[in-house]
Amino acid sequence: MDILRTPAEMTAWSGARADRGRRIALVPTMGYFHEGHLRLMRMARRHADRVVVSLFVNPTQFAPGEDLDRYPRNSERDIRLAGREGVDALFMPDAGAMYPQGFQTVVSVEGLSRHLCGASRPGHFAGVTTVVCKLFHIVRPHCAVFGEKDFQQLAVIRRMVRDLDMGIEILGHPIVREPDGLAMSSRNTYLDDALRPSALSLYSAIGLARQLAAGGMVSEPELRRRVRAHIESFPETEIDYVAFVNEQSLEAADPVDEATVLALAVRVGGRVRLIDNGRLFP
Ligand code: PAF
Image (cartoon, rainbow, N blue to C red; front, side, top):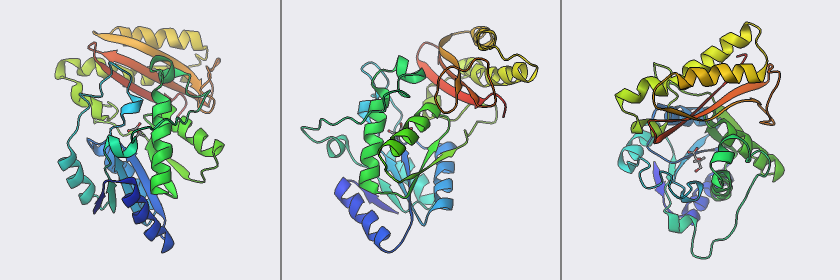
């Protein structure tokens, strides 16, 4: 596996492979790999001849006071795991290489970034789209793989790719869960055993909403009330949002229907912000 640290090295690496007709897949990550990341790498492998994984904890998508400094990192372990997965290149730039002195460009998707996480994390999606746009220009992949846990991020990136005619195929990988149902996330390392039942309230809330909808409850306010009451029945949960939205527009869905996704963000134990989502009629 080649490890590349500057945009110029990465672009040269990709260019040489693309010139030989190789199809390149990119898996953008912030590292601290878990099984969810490894599945993204395997999906990338199924869709391309060469797999590039980027590992960069992007400072511009964290607001002041968020967890940038304590975000889990272990690059030695990540290198080992990516190598074992047969990744061809790992792109590990530092912040200075990605945002050199004088950097002042922002790529922003207006409408879709305003909802859900965008409302509670102002500036977050502009940070994401700017860095993903840069990664696309640096790596020049034919396709890129993202997890569906970050459901809004995936919608925003698809919109950016369409709007800017980037010509990159965007592949979504279904949420990978722990055996107890918790959606895998690098941030799960912040959870201790005592918080686990509260963390699981997101997954069980999706199950409850599906059950209610299958039983004929299609009123959004009623479903939202039931889901909120369920999550709030667990200790140390603080709801950021419970939203039933159209999977394309991310606008509120009322009544809910086949195209509705339940999206959740809940702070657990005061400090761990978890997100999860699921189609209401899977
Ligand atoms: O999903 C993530 O890990 C990040 O938001 C991404 C896409 C790698 C951009 O920094």
